[in-house]
Amino acid sequence: QVQLVESGGGLVQPGGSLRLSCAASGRFFSINAMGWYRQASGKQRELVARITSNGSTNYAHSVKGRFTISRDNAKNTVYLQMNSLKREGTAVYYCSAGVVTTAPGLPYDYWGQGTQVSVSS
Image 1 (cartoon, rainbow, N blue to C red):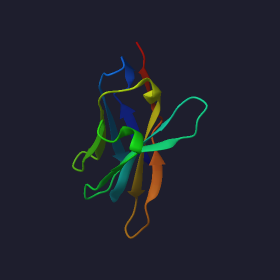
Image 2: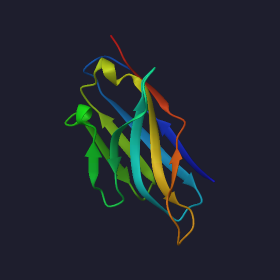
Image 3: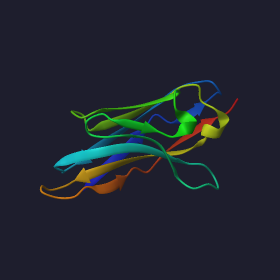
């Protein structure tokens, strides 16, 4: 059983910063790409940032230059540093990881339960 546990959400003022963390635990062979998604109230879930196992990254246009995704493969953890937060960044942020549980095998996407980020004065 693979679990992803997010942490670091909370309430922040516009222009502020937060750092989200997501740690994978359980029994698995490897983790491929990891990513952060968000879902605002009444909207569809959208990709925020994604990072491959070798460190290649891509970002949603709306967060480029303000958010940074990184990972620590030794700790099976992915991070999202969010700077210059805007009100429209208010959402539940979800972590996702493509996990290969047994080798050889294809990755399966696991999701965390989400962490609330609220940007408000």
